[in-house]
Amino acid sequence: MRIGLLGGSFDPPHVGHLLAASDAFEALDLDRLVFIPAAVQPLKVDRATARGEQRLAMTKMLAGSDSRFAVDAIEIDRGGLSYTVETLAALRLRWPSAELFWLVGADVVPSFTQWREPERIVELATVVVVQRAGDSAGGNVPAGMRRLATRRIDVSSTEIRQRVREGRSVRGFVPDAVADFIAAERLYRIED
Image 1 (cartoon, rainbow, N blue to C red):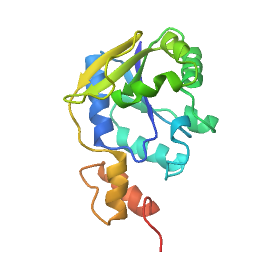
Image 2: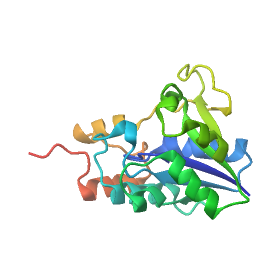
Image 3: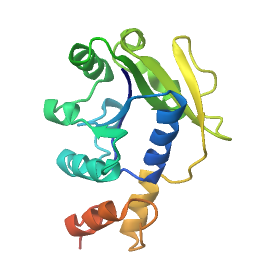
C-alpha cells in the first residue's frame, strides 16, 4: 500500500491543500492520502489561531467523502509539539508494510535541518517536496528527498484569516462547509 501523508497547521485548510493532495495522489500513484493536522508545530509556536479540535473538524470537512482522502488526529490526540519523526515512527508501526510518502511544501526545505531527527525522517518515509509551478522556494532538493511539481495555487491560510478579519468572503478559498464552520465558530475575527 502506498500512503501519502500531508501534515500541517490547516489553520484553516483550503482548496490549495486539496488540489496539492489531488496532484500528489495521482503523481505518486497513492492508495490513500492522509491529512494530519498538527497539534502545535515546533517552528510555528504561538501562530495557530484555531484550536486543534477546530482545525481537525475543518480538515475533515475539506476531505469530505472523497474516498482518496482520510484525516488522522494522531498529532492532535498526542498533544504538545508535533514532531514529524514521532508521527512517522507511530505510523510506521501502524502500517509496517506500507510505503509512506511525507509531503512538504518547498518553503520548508530550508528549515528541514532544524526539524527533530531529519535523518530518521528520511529513513521512515520518502520525503516529497511539493513545488508549485513557477515557485523557486526551496532551491535544490536535498539527498533523500523527491521533488513533485504541482500546479500553482495562489491561496494561503494567512490570506484566508486576513479576509475573515476584514469581513470579506472566503467562499471559493475553502469548501462551503469550512466557510460555514469558520462563521459559526467566529474564527479569525478580531473581537471588540
